[in-house]
Amino acid sequence: MTRRLISALGGGALLVGLLAGCAPTPSYDPTTAERLQQHVLAVSDSSAVGDWATTRTRLLELEASASTALARGEITQERFDAIMSALALVQADVDAAIAAAEQAAAEQAAAEQAAAEQAAAEQAAAEEAARQAEEKDDKGKPDDKGKDKDDDDDD
Image (cartoon, rainbow, N blue to C red; front, side, top):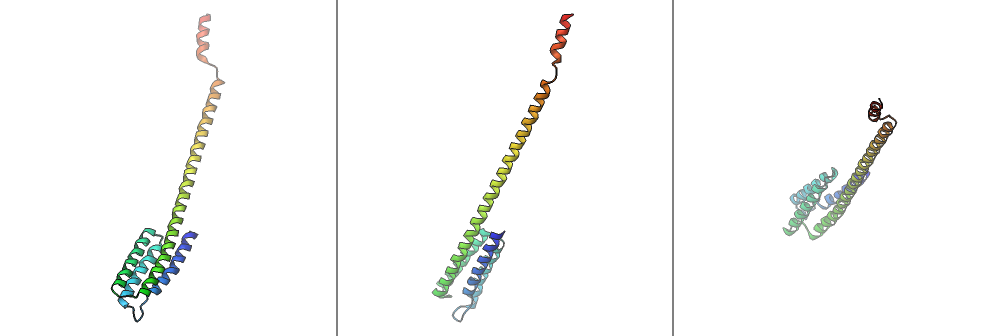
């Protein structure tokens, strides 16, 4: 939970930088700025809920939109570079969050496997103890089959 919160806060801070990089300026078309900001919001929303696959997709969409805006002359190279720098930082945060989630999942799976193995060992030990107790009880009882037969022959 703490890792996720730290990642979300770090990603959120970087997304604020992305939003600032997408803010309209006199040389920046307001329609283009709004389109880029919508992509940033989509990245923010998906990362806030820990949907890392969607976050990666949204980052790629933002990158493509910024590249298109640059190619069309809607943003300057300087603005594009600022957006790409911020994207790289956000992608690094997303990659770290994914790695942390995968590590946590692996640790959880290992803990569950260890618990299952422990339960199986305890079950096997209980079954063995019950078998040994039954054998001990059987050894203490007289064998009626042999005595009855011998008793009849003596008569």
